Length: 111
Image (cartoon, rainbow, N blue to C red; front, side, top):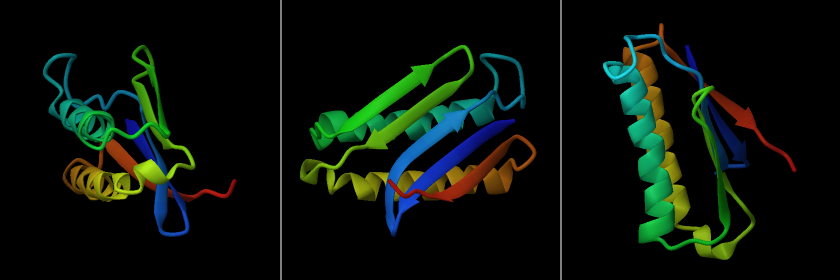
């Protein structure tokens, strides 16, 4: 099972974390894992290469299947909300189709 946590502060997404292996299929054939990875990697690439934001952090641990994207308090990443909201909707759509393998949690985040 893959757990996805979307951390919100008010209406804004502050972080997305994806953790675990879905177990849908074996490594290299797992379309659920592939879809989740694609969504999260697309967001990181968009923030870094398209928006050129400096106010974010990424953490990864391939062994446990973890990737987290964290927005820091930075005005140069305001447009990243569009990418993060799109990712949140995409991750929920994957959950709707493959709910036995992925669970999405919305978490109220207060600093």
